[in-house]
Length: 232
Image (cartoon, rainbow, N blue to C red):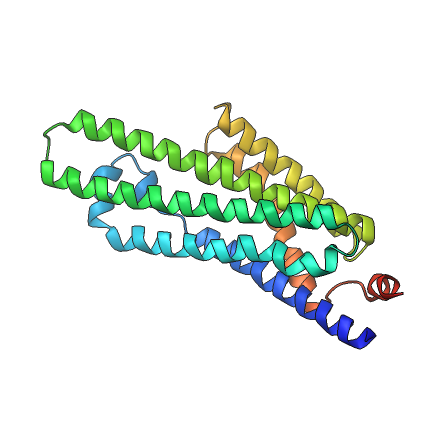
């Protein structure tokens, strides 16, 4: 029985590590530079493949963001079921917001095609509508999605810190990184900062912690002493 539980926890750790890496990689490839540029109404339609590729990778993020807390639920729920359920709920919410972001991205692509057909006719209308869609996409991606996923990370890093399933320095980095990322999203939401260097710097610690945590879980898994105590 103990070996079966150990094997199950090992599989959970490896799966979580893989999903963390998938989340980081797909996050990088989901960036769509043509949408963020000043002439996005012109370039989005002419670079449709780039937009569709970004949407594809953004959809892959759903599997990672939802799957990470789910893959850890069986292990973490033995320590605090409420927190484990909370992390799953926030992960699912993040997945829903990602899908909303993809829909807005595809609407921007459609708007770009319509702008190309209309030419200079009603240009101000297209600019206004495009600006609203881009603003909505930024709020969904960098506020709603980020906050919900980071809250999921915050919950399971709290459990990691309490249970020592991973080294405390690693879970502490996750707690600090989560707090900094939450601050970045809130500052962006109230327009104190934009998607600039400050925003990126505030998000570096949580990205670094996800990378190190992913490698740790794949290579070493959860702390076996803690798992053995859990089984007694």
